[in-house]
Structure formats: C-alpha cells, structure tokens
Image (cartoon, rainbow, N blue to C red; front, side, top):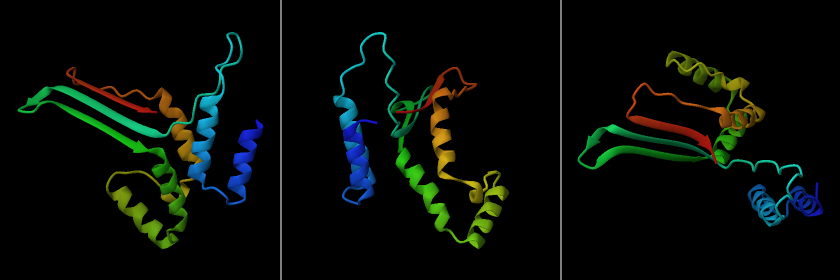
Length: 143
C-alpha cells in the first residue's frame, strides 16, 4: 500500500473525511499513477461504481422508434441497502421474507451480508443474458 493511500485511510479512520470523499481521493491517486511498463504486472481493475442494464429492441418499433432501456444504478445504493437490513427488527424481517416467498422471490434477508454484495458485483463480469428474441439485445454489466 502506498503512502498516499495510507494517509487517506488514516483521515477516514479519524473521521476527517467521509467514505465517499476517501473513495474519490483514492480514485484520483490511481488515475495519477503512471501506466505500468510493458511486461510488468497489470494494475488491478478499478472497483465498479454502477450496475448497468441496457436493452435495445428493434421488434416493437412504435411511433417514437425502437424500444430502448438504459438503467444505471449506483452500486453504493446496493451496498447501503444491505447495511440497512441490519437495522430492521427481526419480526419485520420474518414478515418481509414471508411476503417475498409468497411472491416467488426466494431471498432470505436475514442471511444477506455486505460481503455477499461484493461477491455478486465481482461475478457480474461473467454475466451473460440470453434472450429468445433475435431482434432484442440486452447487456448487464458493471462500470
């Protein structure tokens, strides 16, 4: 770990800056670092910030042209949501889980942990969505 990164983390630990400010500072110092020379180890891939879902359909062309969907969700929103589940009373979690299962969503919110979201985000690089409609293209990825 380089000295600049250590200083940023120290300021975060001391409460002098917020987590968002620390993330922006770390991103800035990573951008300033010179490119790796050929043959050296590659820099790790930057931490993704958004979940993106893009869909284009040529089949259902209406008066306004083809159907297009472009959704960009901040991953920080997902991370914060997982942390907020720890604040939900156990009785409410039981009721929410029951309603989710009734609706066909097999998720147990009591088992949701922050590291699960990070694992999910990491695996999104390998995600492929296949559609049976040849006139529709869909992409799901992190950026």
